[in-house]
Amino acid sequence: MRNPLRFALTGMTLLALSLGIGRFLLTPLLPIMQADAGLSLVGGGWLASVNNLGYLAGALLCTLVPLRPLPALRWGLVAIALSTMGMGLTHGMAFWLFWRVLAGVAAAVLVVHGIAWSLARLHASHHSMLEALVFTGTGVGIVVSGVLVAGLQPLGVRSSASWIGFGLACVVATVMVWRTLAAPLPATTARTAPARLPSATGPAWTLIVAYGLIGFGYVIPATFLPVIAGERLHLPALREWFWPLYGAATIALTLLLPRILRSVDNRRALAAACASMGAGIALCLIWPSIVGLILATILIGSVTMPIVMVVMREARALAPHDPTRLIATLTTVFGVGQIIGPLSAAWLAARQHSFDEPLLLAMAVLVIALGLALVRSRDARAIGTSLPDARCEVQDRQESSGRECV
Image (tube, rainbow, N blue to C red; front, side):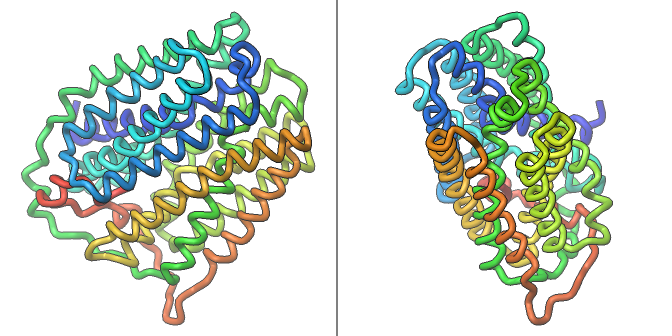
């Protein structure tokens, strides 16, 4: 296999394990854990929030501590496998909270160092589709895990067995990429001239606040989508299938993003993503049918990873020489939003016995984020650039710290 493709597939695997499993496997398994493990809706909110808290802690760790990339990646993979199996091998909130925190920390380490590792090795190839392939990893993890959970559900597979099975799958995937992670940087990477960065089109503070609000708004449907589908449709056999659809939608738009960003600047792309999410949430409220929820899932899921890509692209435009501090700030506010979101949604839903209020709150927050995304700098100009501009220009010095991407 050609090295660039092998590096892209390895990066995709890292994101699939870190986000598709370490972060979001709870989503399709939450209704099953409610049925067979006695987990309450509020308890599910706590598990989601502490996972997001661990993710925030892991992101800050990568920013503040110069971790060595190879050990960080390998230990992150081991921690994802261990924490996933641990969810099935132990019982009770105390154990589950511990495993979800560990999974969050490991997921952040894999995301930060995994993206840095992948794009550093793809830098010389100048192939935007391979870079987009890396970012499809989240959707791939969601699709694979979602299809397996939905397919096994009619067979009566318990949630504990599912956690253990996915943990073993993580072990297999870890073995497959273990040696590739030690691959050195291509010799041409250090000599390649940095790509010309686009100009920022808005102030940093609006990007920061908007990203934090998006973290709150998107995480509510991302955490509770199968539960919401079950509540709206009263068809338990169908509810788990909305999650793999969510992942498939994000894969599709992530692959299309390189072409889209040739003619749309970062802020407009971010505003469009907020509008898509808001419209999807509105459909959940006003059209609670199979067709309505399918469209809602596509509108929300399709922009999940593109939002991250666009925001990081704009961060590099705002701080072209060293975006580390800005990326750390963005990751922090996004993490805070993700922590507050599930807890707020679970509390409101438990109080009202409905997800109407949480969804309305998420929609209102996304409308505010949309407005902030459209705030332009006085001298802003629309610039159409392609995804390669979003690459991290990683030199040997940066590779040793692995702190340049989120």
